Amino acid sequence: MLPHAHASWEEDGTIDDVAAVARTAERLGFHFLTCAEHVVVPVDVAPARGSRYWDPLATFGYLAAVTSRIRLATNVVVLGYHHPLDIAKRYGTLDQVSGGRLVLGLGVGSLQEEFELLGAPFDDRGARADDAIGALRASLSTPRPEYQGTYYRFADVVLDPCALQPRVPLWIGGRTGRSLRRAVALGDGWAPFGLKATDITAMLAVAGATEAFGARPHPIEVVLQNGRPIDPLDEPDATVRAIERLTGAGATAVQLNFVHHSAAHYVEQLEAVVPLISRVARVAPPDGTR
Image (tube, rainbow, N blue to C red; front, side, top):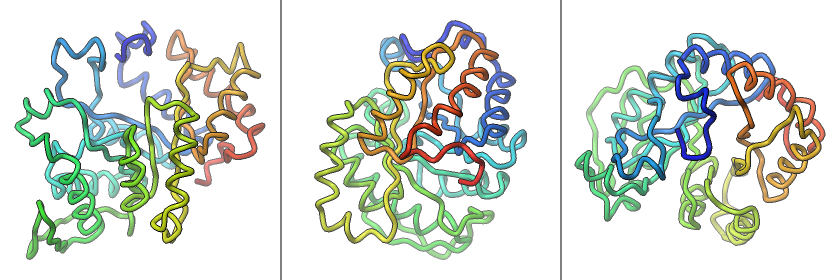
């Protein structure tokens, strides 16, 4: 229920609508679904932040049962709200029950009121997040994790089940240069929000010149989303140009926001965008292989 960014039909939308979208996306070969996390939003903040957030763990647990291939990407789990072992256990279990389809999107968080309501430290959340990512790397895919960090330390514990994937992809969310540096140093992808394409291009150029970027064993995934909703059915050429702006800014993957007036219309937009994506050279078209 993001202000000015949701359709009226979604106000009464159900998990059946979400499942129909998920099954269609999988049938068409899309690579991933995303789900965001907020635990509680203060009433006076809801007009700016939105009011309804489906819990990613429960939602993806359900969608894992009605799909078989499409990846499940949290975008994002707020690190400061959870102990890293809690995340490793719950989302490692999701990776198991989904057959290894988890992409764990992580964020530092910025809604101070929510931190305070949950009794989570706010002022040092960045340093805590860095340590939590290290702890997650050490614990997501092993039943006997050990880690000694500044904020989190554990050993002689059993975490079973753990993730099925030997290395769960970690996408780092945010909208600052610090979030990109965190992604380069600690993650597998960067999934920013609320940034202009020119800003993203400049930030990636700075990051690309750093020693840390050059030392990475694998290229970083850059996951960008369009601002103004696109309309593949009625504005195909404008849709292609919008996706090209994202790839021109550095996107290797895109999250697409559509114009949609019903669940059925959303499904139609998914179907309409597939041939348009194939016209954009830098984006792999949906094919079910990624």
